[in-house]
Image (cartoon, rainbow, N blue to C red; front, side):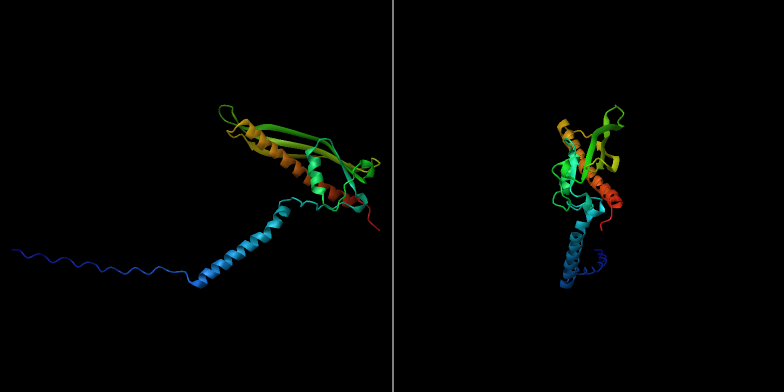
Length: 202
């Protein structure tokens, strides 16, 4: 009988390195970092509206000599947004023009839209929604304090494959945003113009 050749020796298996375990101090440092990051985010949140150009409700400065004011307009979303901004602040609202020292008039508001994108079949893919607001400010005797100015706001509106009612609701929400944005801009321009032109207090 032929002798069997000896089997080659198996390579020795290296022991697997033990898995690293997080120590108590590492876990504690992780919790501290997470808490610090959360605190930083909470502290920065109140600054976001200011950085985006929006004013906090009631934070509006109007010269004392022009307070109270009256917002004159018909059925106007911008008028409602202005009243909402001024309610609860230092600016007083006069119930009638005769009792006001400043009359802000919303002269006109207009909505419009235009097509900005279509596909190869002519189907509309996106619109551009537009909102125009014209306003001025006068004294009770009719003297012009802020000349008539027109704001133009616009935003793209995609035409998704949803029901007509859903599109109408989304479009209505965009126009509500337009009204609030217009109110913010009107108050900002009034503040700059009126403070620069108002007589100095003794």
